[in-house]
Picture 1 (cartoon, helix red, strand yellow):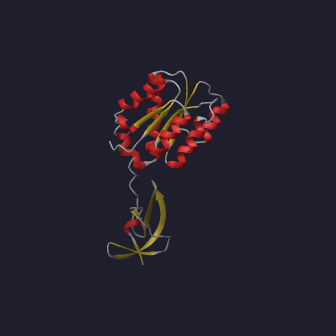
Picture 2: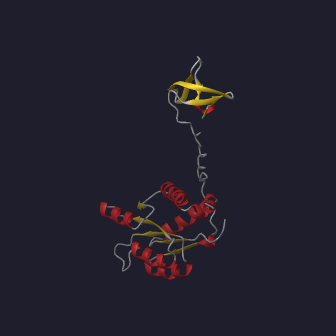
Picture 3: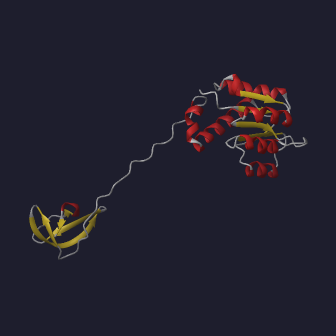
Length: 206
């Protein structure tokens, strides 16, 4: 996978940093595409140079710079950067704030390995759907179904507008329409002197 898809993990707990790094490396990400920091200031210093495509950050509610504020600063360096938040407290206001800045998820601490893996997988799948240009790269680290092909364009035949009394050509003969009906969703015509119903598409109006 190309090495330009970069992840920055910023959390005050060394265990969370290690946990997240191991998860990302387990997805197949090269080690040099992952950076970690223990506080927003360190994360900003690393991030301005590293320009991550994805920031996984603690909320840092008591820090001078919150996780959301850190994200705002890093987006100036890489507008395509996405955010995922971790927090010991998840209130309706936290959820609203996370939604407002477009965070892919807000995961409550403490979490299990399975919870982080499942949540991160879903976030990467959503990112692939949102940004098709990343689909190939993300498919290399998580099993993502390819984008659904566009359904074939259905071209409906142009049917002649017919009414009783119209003259039409049928089998190289000029006939007169006796009645026009719709049968099973198909426009059909009965010609004078004929008992069978004929699909209108087989007739040429004259």
